[in-house]
Image (tube, rainbow, N blue to C red; front, side, top):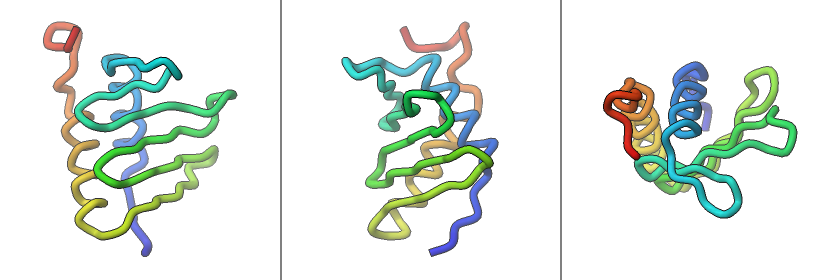
Length: 94
């Protein structure tokens, strides 16, 4: 399936997850059910949640892995909610 995604939204959500998400032992951070992390050199961004795995590569190429359209829609809604600026220093989660 071809999905046109707003890669700026994805990167905004990733930055918010990276800044405000809860870290695990592997350095991955999770916020509102979405986990974000990068590869060793930082050129590839990974986001996982809602049954979706996304890989955003250098030059804005991306790959999505999911079983059905509903998973993808829920994943994108979660990214939109995270990206909307709900997590500012004044309102962020500790």
